Image (cartoon, rainbow, N blue to C red; front, top):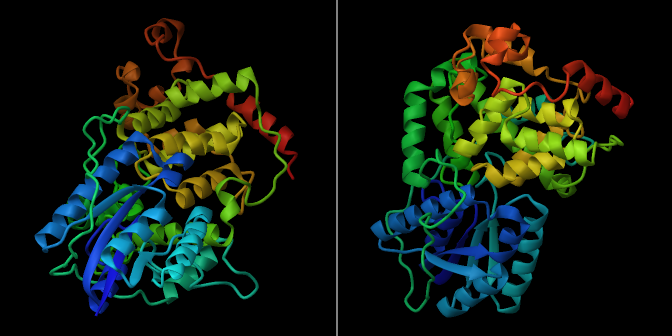
Length: 458
Protein backbone atom coordinates (compact mmCIF):
# COMPACT_ATOMS: atom_id res chain seq x y z
CA UNK A 1 0.00 0.00 0.00
CA UNK A 2 1.10 3.55 -0.71
CA UNK A 3 1.29 6.64 1.49
CA UNK A 4 -0.58 9.71 0.32
CA UNK A 5 -0.82 13.41 1.09
CA UNK A 6 -4.24 15.05 0.79
CA UNK A 7 -3.85 18.76 0.13
CA UNK A 8 -6.88 20.70 1.38
CA UNK A 9 -7.52 24.06 -0.29
CA UNK A 10 -11.12 25.30 -0.59
CA UNK A 11 -12.60 21.97 0.54
CA UNK A 12 -12.28 22.13 4.33
CA UNK A 13 -14.59 19.28 5.31
CA UNK A 14 -14.73 15.54 5.86
CA UNK A 15 -18.14 14.79 4.35
CA UNK A 16 -18.18 14.27 0.58
CA UNK A 17 -14.46 14.73 0.05
CA UNK A 18 -13.36 12.74 -3.04
CA UNK A 19 -9.61 13.41 -2.70
CA UNK A 20 -9.57 12.17 0.90
CA UNK A 21 -11.69 9.11 0.16
CA UNK A 22 -9.57 8.22 -2.87
CA UNK A 23 -6.39 8.52 -0.83
CA UNK A 24 -7.79 6.43 2.01
CA UNK A 25 -8.86 3.74 -0.45
CA UNK A 26 -5.35 3.44 -1.85
CA UNK A 27 -3.10 4.14 1.10
CA UNK A 28 -1.96 2.63 4.33
CA UNK A 29 -1.49 6.15 5.76
CA UNK A 30 -2.60 9.62 4.74
CA UNK A 31 -1.30 13.08 5.63
CA UNK A 32 -4.14 15.66 5.65
CA UNK A 33 -2.32 18.91 4.81
CA UNK A 34 -3.23 22.57 4.60
CA UNK A 35 -0.69 25.15 3.48
CA UNK A 36 -1.19 28.80 4.34
CA UNK A 37 -0.06 29.87 0.89
CA UNK A 38 2.06 33.03 0.80
CA UNK A 39 1.05 33.70 -2.81
CA UNK A 40 -2.67 33.56 -2.01
CA UNK A 41 -2.22 36.01 0.84
CA UNK A 42 -0.25 38.34 -1.42
CA UNK A 43 -3.08 38.21 -3.97
CA UNK A 44 -5.54 39.64 -1.44
CA UNK A 45 -6.99 36.66 0.40
CA UNK A 46 -5.70 37.84 3.77
CA UNK A 47 -8.87 39.78 4.61
CA UNK A 48 -9.82 39.58 8.31
CA UNK A 49 -13.27 38.05 7.82
CA UNK A 50 -12.07 35.23 5.59
CA UNK A 51 -9.02 34.63 7.79
CA UNK A 52 -11.34 34.26 10.79
CA UNK A 53 -13.56 31.73 9.03
CA UNK A 54 -10.52 29.93 7.67
CA UNK A 55 -9.16 29.57 11.20
CA UNK A 56 -12.54 28.21 12.37
CA UNK A 57 -12.63 25.75 9.47
CA UNK A 58 -9.10 24.46 10.07
CA UNK A 59 -9.69 23.99 13.78
CA UNK A 60 -12.93 22.14 13.11
CA UNK A 61 -11.29 20.00 10.43
CA UNK A 62 -8.47 19.10 12.83
CA UNK A 63 -11.00 18.20 15.52
CA UNK A 64 -12.92 15.99 13.09
CA UNK A 65 -9.74 14.22 12.01
CA UNK A 66 -8.68 13.68 15.64
CA UNK A 67 -12.08 12.11 16.35
CA UNK A 68 -11.10 9.59 13.64
CA UNK A 69 -7.57 8.96 14.90
CA UNK A 70 -5.85 11.48 12.64
CA UNK A 71 -4.83 15.13 12.69
CA UNK A 72 -4.38 18.07 10.35
CA UNK A 73 -0.86 19.11 9.35
CA UNK A 74 -0.57 22.88 8.86
CA UNK A 75 2.31 24.58 7.10
CA UNK A 76 2.97 28.13 5.89
CA UNK A 77 4.98 29.52 2.99
CA UNK A 78 5.41 28.58 -0.65
CA UNK A 79 2.78 25.94 -1.35
CA UNK A 80 4.78 23.83 -3.80
CA UNK A 81 7.83 23.79 -1.52
CA UNK A 82 5.76 22.87 1.53
CA UNK A 83 3.84 20.07 -0.20
CA UNK A 84 7.10 18.61 -1.49
CA UNK A 85 8.63 18.85 1.99
CA UNK A 86 5.69 17.04 3.60
CA UNK A 87 5.70 14.40 0.86
CA UNK A 88 9.38 13.84 1.62
CA UNK A 89 8.85 13.58 5.37
CA UNK A 90 6.03 11.07 4.87
CA UNK A 91 7.82 9.20 2.06
CA UNK A 92 4.58 9.73 0.12
CA UNK A 93 3.89 8.20 -3.27
CA UNK A 94 0.89 10.38 -4.17
CA UNK A 95 -0.70 13.76 -3.51
CA UNK A 96 -4.45 14.22 -3.91
CA UNK A 97 -6.21 17.58 -4.23
CA UNK A 98 -9.35 19.22 -5.62
CA UNK A 99 -9.37 21.03 -8.94
CA UNK A 100 -9.95 24.78 -8.96
CA UNK A 101 -10.58 27.33 -11.70
CA UNK A 102 -8.58 30.52 -11.20
CA UNK A 103 -5.48 31.36 -13.21
CA UNK A 104 -3.43 30.96 -10.04
CA UNK A 105 -4.96 27.53 -9.38
CA UNK A 106 -4.00 26.42 -12.90
CA UNK A 107 -0.40 27.58 -12.37
CA UNK A 108 -0.28 26.01 -8.93
CA UNK A 109 -1.36 22.64 -10.29
CA UNK A 110 1.18 22.80 -13.12
CA UNK A 111 4.07 23.71 -10.82
CA UNK A 112 3.05 21.15 -8.21
CA UNK A 113 2.77 18.36 -10.76
CA UNK A 114 6.22 19.16 -12.12
CA UNK A 115 7.89 19.42 -8.71
CA UNK A 116 6.31 16.24 -7.39
CA UNK A 117 7.09 14.36 -10.60
CA UNK A 118 10.75 15.20 -10.17
CA UNK A 119 10.58 13.41 -6.81
CA UNK A 120 8.75 10.39 -8.22
CA UNK A 121 5.47 11.42 -6.57
CA UNK A 122 2.21 11.52 -8.55
CA UNK A 123 -0.39 14.29 -8.34
CA UNK A 124 -4.08 13.32 -8.57
CA UNK A 125 -6.50 16.22 -9.16
CA UNK A 126 -10.18 15.51 -8.49
CA UNK A 127 -13.10 17.28 -10.19
CA UNK A 128 -16.54 18.17 -8.81
CA UNK A 129 -15.30 18.87 -5.29
CA UNK A 130 -15.84 22.64 -5.08
CA UNK A 131 -18.60 22.65 -7.74
CA UNK A 132 -21.56 20.41 -8.56
CA UNK A 133 -20.31 19.57 -12.05
CA UNK A 134 -16.73 20.06 -13.18
CA UNK A 135 -16.14 23.11 -15.37
CA UNK A 136 -16.30 21.88 -18.95
CA UNK A 137 -18.60 18.97 -18.10
CA UNK A 138 -21.26 20.67 -20.23
CA UNK A 139 -20.31 22.84 -23.20
CA UNK A 140 -22.08 24.27 -26.24
CA UNK A 141 -21.31 22.92 -29.68
CA UNK A 142 -19.19 25.84 -30.85
CA UNK A 143 -17.36 26.95 -27.71
CA UNK A 144 -15.42 25.72 -24.70
CA UNK A 145 -17.93 27.27 -22.27
CA UNK A 146 -21.41 28.74 -22.00
CA UNK A 147 -21.58 32.54 -22.04
CA UNK A 148 -25.33 32.67 -21.26
CA UNK A 149 -26.84 31.11 -18.16
CA UNK A 150 -30.20 29.81 -19.44
CA UNK A 151 -28.83 27.32 -22.01
CA UNK A 152 -26.13 26.36 -19.50
CA UNK A 153 -28.75 25.63 -16.87
CA UNK A 154 -30.80 23.57 -19.31
CA UNK A 155 -27.81 21.32 -20.07
CA UNK A 156 -26.61 21.35 -16.46
CA UNK A 157 -30.02 20.14 -15.26
CA UNK A 158 -29.91 17.19 -17.65
CA UNK A 159 -26.68 15.82 -16.20
CA UNK A 160 -26.64 13.36 -13.35
CA UNK A 161 -24.86 14.46 -10.19
CA UNK A 162 -22.53 12.01 -8.48
CA UNK A 163 -23.62 10.63 -5.12
CA UNK A 164 -22.08 12.38 -2.10
CA UNK A 165 -19.53 10.42 -0.11
CA UNK A 166 -19.79 9.69 3.59
CA UNK A 167 -17.17 11.04 5.97
CA UNK A 168 -14.41 8.50 6.70
CA UNK A 169 -14.57 6.49 9.89
CA UNK A 170 -10.83 6.52 10.54
CA UNK A 171 -7.74 8.31 9.27
CA UNK A 172 -4.23 7.06 10.01
CA UNK A 173 -1.48 9.69 9.77
CA UNK A 174 2.15 8.51 9.56
CA UNK A 175 4.59 9.48 12.29
CA UNK A 176 7.33 11.99 11.75
CA UNK A 177 5.42 14.73 9.90
CA UNK A 178 5.63 18.01 11.75
CA UNK A 179 2.95 20.69 11.84
CA UNK A 180 2.80 24.35 12.61
CA UNK A 181 0.17 25.73 15.00
CA UNK A 182 -3.46 25.91 14.02
CA UNK A 183 -4.51 29.50 13.31
CA UNK A 184 -7.11 31.19 15.51
CA UNK A 185 -9.43 34.13 15.03
CA UNK A 186 -8.31 35.37 18.45
CA UNK A 187 -6.09 38.37 17.95
CA UNK A 188 -7.34 39.14 14.46
CA UNK A 189 -8.34 42.77 14.00
CA UNK A 190 -10.76 44.28 11.50
CA UNK A 191 -13.34 41.48 11.61
CA UNK A 192 -16.99 42.32 11.11
CA UNK A 193 -18.75 42.25 14.49
CA UNK A 194 -21.61 40.13 13.14
CA UNK A 195 -19.41 37.47 11.54
CA UNK A 196 -20.74 33.96 12.30
CA UNK A 197 -18.71 30.95 13.35
CA UNK A 198 -17.16 28.86 10.59
CA UNK A 199 -16.29 25.20 10.25
CA UNK A 200 -17.99 22.08 8.95
CA UNK A 201 -20.00 21.30 12.05
CA UNK A 202 -21.47 24.80 12.28
CA UNK A 203 -22.14 24.76 8.54
CA UNK A 204 -23.98 21.45 8.69
CA UNK A 205 -26.19 22.77 11.49
CA UNK A 206 -27.02 25.80 9.36
CA UNK A 207 -27.80 23.55 6.40
CA UNK A 208 -30.09 21.29 8.41
CA UNK A 209 -31.98 24.28 9.82
CA UNK A 210 -32.29 25.83 6.34
CA UNK A 211 -33.67 22.64 4.80
CA UNK A 212 -36.15 22.27 7.65
CA UNK A 213 -37.48 25.83 7.85
CA UNK A 214 -36.22 27.99 4.99
CA UNK A 215 -36.01 26.30 1.63
CA UNK A 216 -39.76 25.81 1.10
CA UNK A 217 -40.33 29.56 0.86
CA UNK A 218 -37.15 30.37 -1.02
CA UNK A 219 -38.75 30.92 -4.43
CA UNK A 220 -41.21 33.46 -3.03
CA UNK A 221 -38.96 35.30 -0.59
CA UNK A 222 -35.31 35.09 -1.67
CA UNK A 223 -35.42 38.66 -3.05
CA UNK A 224 -37.20 40.07 0.02
CA UNK A 225 -34.56 42.21 1.69
CA UNK A 226 -36.29 42.46 5.06
CA UNK A 227 -37.25 38.77 5.26
CA UNK A 228 -33.60 37.67 5.06
CA UNK A 229 -34.87 34.42 3.55
CA UNK A 230 -31.73 33.26 1.75
CA UNK A 231 -29.69 30.31 2.98
CA UNK A 232 -26.59 32.28 4.10
CA UNK A 233 -24.54 29.22 3.18
CA UNK A 234 -22.28 31.02 0.71
CA UNK A 235 -19.32 31.40 3.13
CA UNK A 236 -19.54 27.68 3.89
CA UNK A 237 -19.51 26.89 0.17
CA UNK A 238 -16.62 29.27 -0.48
CA UNK A 239 -14.29 27.53 1.99
CA UNK A 240 -15.74 24.11 1.27
CA UNK A 241 -17.18 23.47 4.72
CA UNK A 242 -20.19 22.25 2.75
CA UNK A 243 -20.26 20.24 -0.45
CA UNK A 244 -22.31 21.71 -3.32
CA UNK A 245 -22.94 18.15 -4.52
CA UNK A 246 -24.50 17.24 -1.18
CA UNK A 247 -26.55 20.44 -1.21
CA UNK A 248 -28.09 19.57 -4.57
CA UNK A 249 -28.99 16.06 -3.46
CA UNK A 250 -30.49 17.17 -0.15
CA UNK A 251 -32.40 20.06 -1.73
CA UNK A 252 -33.87 17.78 -4.40
CA UNK A 253 -35.31 15.48 -1.75
CA UNK A 254 -37.87 18.21 -1.12
CA UNK A 255 -40.53 19.17 -3.63
CA UNK A 256 -41.87 22.47 -4.83
CA UNK A 257 -40.60 25.73 -6.29
CA UNK A 258 -38.40 26.58 -3.29
CA UNK A 259 -35.91 23.72 -3.69
CA UNK A 260 -35.92 24.19 -7.47
CA UNK A 261 -35.08 27.88 -7.10
CA UNK A 262 -32.30 27.09 -4.63
CA UNK A 263 -30.73 24.49 -6.94
CA UNK A 264 -30.85 27.07 -9.72
CA UNK A 265 -28.68 29.36 -7.60
CA UNK A 266 -26.16 26.55 -7.14
CA UNK A 267 -26.15 26.22 -10.92
CA UNK A 268 -25.35 29.95 -11.20
CA UNK A 269 -22.31 29.26 -9.03
CA UNK A 270 -21.21 26.46 -11.37
CA UNK A 271 -21.87 28.76 -14.34
CA UNK A 272 -19.43 31.37 -13.07
CA UNK A 273 -16.82 28.73 -12.32
CA UNK A 274 -16.98 27.33 -15.85
CA UNK A 275 -16.67 30.85 -17.31
CA UNK A 276 -13.58 31.59 -15.22
CA UNK A 277 -12.05 28.19 -15.96
CA UNK A 278 -12.30 28.94 -19.67
CA UNK A 279 -11.40 32.64 -19.42
CA UNK A 280 -9.09 33.07 -16.39
CA UNK A 281 -8.32 36.66 -17.42
CA UNK A 282 -11.88 37.62 -16.48
CA UNK A 283 -10.82 37.86 -12.85
CA UNK A 284 -9.22 41.22 -13.68
CA UNK A 285 -10.07 42.11 -17.30
CA UNK A 286 -13.42 42.70 -18.96
CA UNK A 287 -15.03 39.48 -20.17
CA UNK A 288 -16.64 41.52 -22.94
CA UNK A 289 -14.73 44.62 -23.98
CA UNK A 290 -17.07 47.61 -23.70
CA UNK A 291 -14.59 50.49 -24.17
CA UNK A 292 -15.75 52.13 -20.97
CA UNK A 293 -14.38 55.48 -19.93
CA UNK A 294 -14.77 54.98 -16.19
CA UNK A 295 -14.80 58.06 -13.98
CA UNK A 296 -11.61 58.80 -12.09
CA UNK A 297 -10.25 61.77 -10.16
CA UNK A 298 -11.17 63.49 -6.91
CA UNK A 299 -14.93 63.61 -7.49
CA UNK A 300 -15.09 59.91 -8.28
CA UNK A 301 -12.96 59.10 -5.25
CA UNK A 302 -15.34 61.06 -3.01
CA UNK A 303 -18.29 59.17 -4.47
CA UNK A 304 -16.56 55.82 -3.91
CA UNK A 305 -15.80 56.75 -0.29
CA UNK A 306 -19.47 57.63 0.28
CA UNK A 307 -20.52 54.34 -1.33
CA UNK A 308 -18.15 52.31 0.83
CA UNK A 309 -19.26 54.04 4.02
CA UNK A 310 -22.99 53.78 3.31
CA UNK A 311 -23.70 57.49 2.97
CA UNK A 312 -24.76 57.86 -0.66
CA UNK A 313 -28.12 59.35 0.35
CA UNK A 314 -29.97 56.40 -1.19
CA UNK A 315 -31.11 54.51 1.94
CA UNK A 316 -31.35 51.03 0.40
CA UNK A 317 -27.82 51.32 -1.02
CA UNK A 318 -26.51 52.61 2.30
CA UNK A 319 -28.31 49.86 4.22
CA UNK A 320 -26.72 47.15 2.09
CA UNK A 321 -23.23 48.63 2.41
CA UNK A 322 -23.58 48.87 6.17
CA UNK A 323 -24.80 45.27 6.34
CA UNK A 324 -21.65 44.25 4.46
CA UNK A 325 -19.39 46.02 6.94
CA UNK A 326 -21.21 44.66 9.98
CA UNK A 327 -21.72 41.04 8.90
CA UNK A 328 -19.12 40.37 6.22
CA UNK A 329 -22.08 39.36 4.08
CA UNK A 330 -24.76 41.08 2.02
CA UNK A 331 -28.17 40.00 0.76
CA UNK A 332 -27.99 38.98 -2.90
CA UNK A 333 -30.52 41.61 -4.01
CA UNK A 334 -28.47 44.19 -2.14
CA UNK A 335 -25.35 43.09 -4.00
CA UNK A 336 -27.05 43.68 -7.33
CA UNK A 337 -28.28 47.10 -6.23
CA UNK A 338 -24.99 48.44 -4.89
CA UNK A 339 -23.04 47.06 -7.85
CA UNK A 340 -25.37 48.64 -10.37
CA UNK A 341 -25.25 51.91 -8.43
CA UNK A 342 -21.44 52.03 -8.40
CA UNK A 343 -20.85 50.99 -11.99
CA UNK A 344 -23.80 52.60 -13.77
CA UNK A 345 -25.13 55.43 -11.61
CA UNK A 346 -21.71 56.59 -10.38
CA UNK A 347 -19.99 55.10 -13.44
CA UNK A 348 -16.97 53.77 -11.52
CA UNK A 349 -14.89 50.79 -12.66
CA UNK A 350 -16.31 47.47 -11.47
CA UNK A 351 -12.86 46.44 -10.23
CA UNK A 352 -13.07 49.11 -7.52
CA UNK A 353 -16.24 47.53 -6.17
CA UNK A 354 -15.01 43.97 -6.57
CA UNK A 355 -11.87 44.81 -4.61
CA UNK A 356 -13.87 46.38 -1.78
CA UNK A 357 -16.14 43.34 -1.59
CA UNK A 358 -13.13 41.03 -1.37
CA UNK A 359 -11.85 43.09 1.55
CA UNK A 360 -15.02 42.37 3.54
CA UNK A 361 -16.98 39.40 2.18
CA UNK A 362 -16.65 36.16 4.10
CA UNK A 363 -17.77 34.38 0.92
CA UNK A 364 -15.58 36.38 -1.46
CA UNK A 365 -14.04 34.16 -4.10
CA UNK A 366 -12.72 35.02 -7.52
CA UNK A 367 -15.31 33.31 -9.71
CA UNK A 368 -18.50 34.49 -8.05
CA UNK A 369 -17.35 37.91 -6.90
CA UNK A 370 -15.59 39.07 -10.04
CA UNK A 371 -18.08 37.64 -12.52
CA UNK A 372 -21.11 38.88 -10.63
CA UNK A 373 -19.54 42.33 -10.63
CA UNK A 374 -18.94 42.06 -14.35
CA UNK A 375 -22.56 40.98 -14.85
CA UNK A 376 -23.77 44.07 -12.98
CA UNK A 377 -21.35 46.36 -14.84
CA UNK A 378 -22.38 45.13 -18.27
CA UNK A 379 -18.90 43.86 -19.10
CA UNK A 380 -19.72 40.24 -18.30
CA UNK A 381 -22.35 37.68 -19.26
CA UNK A 382 -25.49 39.77 -18.83
CA UNK A 383 -27.39 39.68 -22.12
CA UNK A 384 -28.73 43.17 -21.33
CA UNK A 385 -25.49 45.07 -20.62
CA UNK A 386 -27.21 48.47 -20.51
CA UNK A 387 -29.58 47.38 -17.71
CA UNK A 388 -29.59 49.98 -14.88
CA UNK A 389 -31.29 49.22 -11.57
CA UNK A 390 -33.12 52.17 -10.06
CA UNK A 391 -32.39 51.96 -6.31
CA UNK A 392 -35.60 53.64 -5.16
CA UNK A 393 -37.79 51.53 -7.43
CA UNK A 394 -35.95 48.41 -6.30
CA UNK A 395 -36.34 49.46 -2.67
CA UNK A 396 -40.09 49.94 -3.05
CA UNK A 397 -40.34 46.51 -4.66
CA UNK A 398 -38.07 44.45 -2.41
CA UNK A 399 -38.34 46.40 0.86
CA UNK A 400 -41.86 47.81 0.54
CA UNK A 401 -42.29 48.70 4.22
CA UNK A 402 -38.73 49.94 4.67
CA UNK A 403 -37.92 47.36 7.34
CA UNK A 404 -34.53 46.48 5.85
CA UNK A 405 -33.53 50.14 5.55
CA UNK A 406 -34.53 50.96 9.12
CA UNK A 407 -32.60 47.91 10.35
CA UNK A 408 -29.32 49.19 8.91
CA UNK A 409 -29.84 52.96 8.72
CA UNK A 410 -31.02 53.72 12.26
CA UNK A 411 -31.11 57.48 11.69
CA UNK A 412 -34.20 56.82 9.56
CA UNK A 413 -35.88 54.52 12.09
CA UNK A 414 -38.54 57.12 12.87
CA UNK A 415 -39.80 57.30 9.30
CA UNK A 416 -42.75 55.09 8.53
CA UNK A 417 -43.51 53.12 5.38
CA UNK A 418 -42.13 54.00 1.98
CA UNK A 419 -41.09 57.50 2.98
CA UNK A 420 -37.93 55.93 4.32
CA UNK A 421 -36.71 55.27 0.77
CA UNK A 422 -36.71 58.93 -0.31
CA UNK A 423 -36.15 61.07 2.80
CA UNK A 424 -34.96 63.99 0.68
CA UNK A 425 -38.57 64.43 -0.48
CA UNK A 426 -39.86 65.14 3.03
CA UNK A 427 -41.21 68.64 3.78
CA UNK A 428 -38.58 70.93 5.23
CA UNK A 429 -39.64 70.64 8.86
CA UNK A 430 -39.63 66.85 8.75
CA UNK A 431 -36.49 66.70 6.62
CA UNK A 432 -34.53 68.70 9.17
CA UNK A 433 -35.22 66.07 11.79
CA UNK A 434 -33.27 63.59 9.69
CA UNK A 435 -30.30 65.77 8.86
CA UNK A 436 -27.94 62.91 9.60
CA UNK A 437 -29.11 61.29 6.38
CA UNK A 438 -27.21 62.91 3.52
CA UNK A 439 -28.75 64.18 0.33
CA UNK A 440 -28.23 61.89 -2.69
CA UNK A 441 -24.71 62.29 -4.04
CA UNK A 442 -26.06 62.23 -7.59
CA UNK A 443 -29.50 62.45 -9.15
CA UNK A 444 -30.65 59.23 -10.77
CA UNK A 445 -31.50 60.97 -14.04
CA UNK A 446 -28.10 62.66 -14.08
CA UNK A 447 -26.32 59.37 -13.41
CA UNK A 448 -28.31 57.56 -16.08
CA UNK A 449 -27.59 60.21 -18.70
CA UNK A 450 -23.88 60.19 -17.85
CA UNK A 451 -23.78 56.41 -18.13
CA UNK A 452 -25.53 56.37 -21.49
CA UNK A 453 -23.38 59.16 -22.85
CA UNK A 454 -20.11 57.63 -21.68
CA UNK A 455 -21.01 54.10 -22.70
CA UNK A 456 -22.12 55.38 -26.09
CA UNK A 457 -24.76 52.62 -26.24
CA UNK A 458 -22.09 50.38 -27.83
